[in-house]
Image (tube, rainbow, N blue to C red; front, top):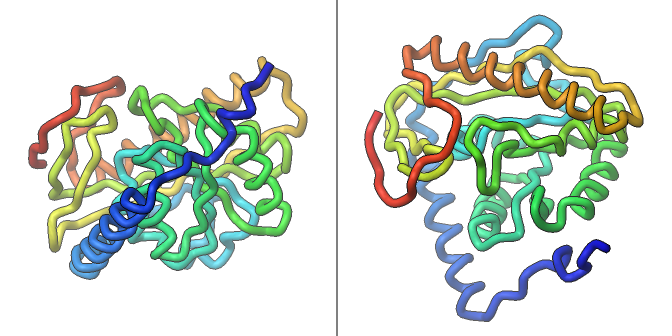
Length: 246
């Protein structure tokens, strides 16, 4: 039986809420300060979205957790609802992205996922968009989870995979190898061909299309990194605790 307590939103003390709020304000300010200096380009596969991003309606966007920072800047102000975990890390991310116009839907593969999918389904049916950091919140890095396939099979919404590569960045030695762009860095977004998923898939079908989505994500990552001459990061996990440079 599902544990209803796992779907409950964590309750934070006043001190914790103040810390979250202050940290989110500082992080969002840093994103804006660095973001205005970044030099951004985009490329698209055939049968992708419009280059001017004018057709962002009723789509599902999965991407890797490590490029959250540049993705926030690239898609700021767009109608994209982002699924974030119910952990403390997810709370920080939710508060930051909301400052850039992204509604946060709380849940993950490990906690609150079913409820979050229901909320995202309602948004998709109202021609809004859903975003997944698809290997979060715990990894392993570059291994796609099946949430977008489930949502696409429920709604018929197309899946659009993308990746944002960064030429010059600080790289955290975390599970995701999180990238923090340096000021004035070049960044490049590649958007893959849309993936259409049949409705009401069984478990075998879900896994089949999850693997197709995995291929699209790897394709977008490879092309974005090749555009900037950035060395690839292997799939897997890395220990926490330090920051290096690229």
